[in-house]
Length: 436
Image (cartoon, helix red, strand yellow):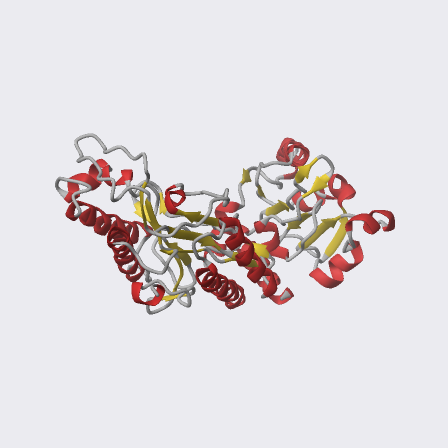
C-alpha cells in the first residue's frame, strides 16, 4: 500500500511544482471530560500518507534536493504508550511510511524554514490549529521580507485543497477495492436488517444488528450515525434518535453505511415493516424508485450532477402533479421550487474517504463538472410527506392518506468508461423483491 501513497504524493507534488505543501493531522476529539473518541485521521493527511496518529505534520517539498517527503511525528515515549498505545516514532516513520526525512513534532518550528525558503508558494489550509497557522504565517512573512535580497522564497499562500481534492475525486484501483468491500458489507447488513425488522422491534435493535454486521465482517465501524426511521420518523432527513417501536403498517427507512480502511459506503432502503406496502406507500415508493433508476442512467462520462438531479426533480414533480399533491405546470413548479415541500435535498454527493467526499460540483457559476471514470457519487432521491406538512402557497391541501410517508432510496454509483456500476446493487429495491 505504500506504493499507492507514494504515487499519490508524486501526483500532488507534480501539481504544486516549485511549491511547498504543509498538511496537519486531525486533533483528538473529546467525548467527555478526559475521555476521547476513537481517533479518526484527517482525510487529506491519510490520503497522502496512510499515517494514523495525531500530532503529526507532513511537508512535501518537490524542489528540495534530498527531502521531498518530510514527516513530523510524536516521540516514542514508553510511559504514554502504556496508556494510549504504541507510536510509530521517527525511525519507523522513515522505514515504514517512506519519509525521506522524519523529525519530532517539537522540531517543526526549527526545521520548517529549510523546506520553505526555495519554494515559490506555500500550500497550506488555514484551519483549526491556530498555533500551526501562526507558525506558517511567521515563517512566510520572514521569508517574504528577505525576498528582495535573495530573489527566492514563497510569495503566496494557497489552500492545497484546490489542487489535492481533484485527485481524490478519481478513485484508483486500490481505492475501488476498499469501496467495493464497504458496499459489500453494507449490503449484508441491510439485507439482514430487512429480515430482522417486524412489528414490535425497536429502531435501536435494528441499529445494533446493522452495526454488529459491519464489525463482524471487518469494517472499522459506521460511516456516519445510522438512521433507522420508522413511520413518520422517515420524514426527518437526519433522524438518529432510533428509539421508536416499529408498528404494523409502517414503512421503515434505513440509511446506513460502513467504513473500510477509511473508505465509506452510503446506502438507503425503505420497505414495509409487515412485508406489504399500502396502496399509498407503494405509489410513493415506486415514484421515488422510477426517479432513482432514471437518474442512475444519467451517471456516465460527460454528464453532470445537475443532469441527474434534474431528472429526479422532473420525475418526482410530474408524479406529484399526477397524484394531485401539486397542481400547475411542471416546469413552473420546478422553477418556483414548489416540489421542495416534498423533496428538499439534492439527489446525491461524492463518496470516498469522506461520506460527503472532497470535490467540486461546479467550475464557477455556470459550468458544471463533467463526470469522469473513477468518480463515485450517491444517487438518492426521496419524497417526505410529514404528518404536519402544510401545502405550499397556491397548492392543494394534502389528504391524510399521504401524511407520514417518507421514502428514500440510495445507491453508490461508480462512473466507468462506458457508463456506470452500481456498487450497492446487492441490496434489493424492487417491490417484488422486498414484499413478502
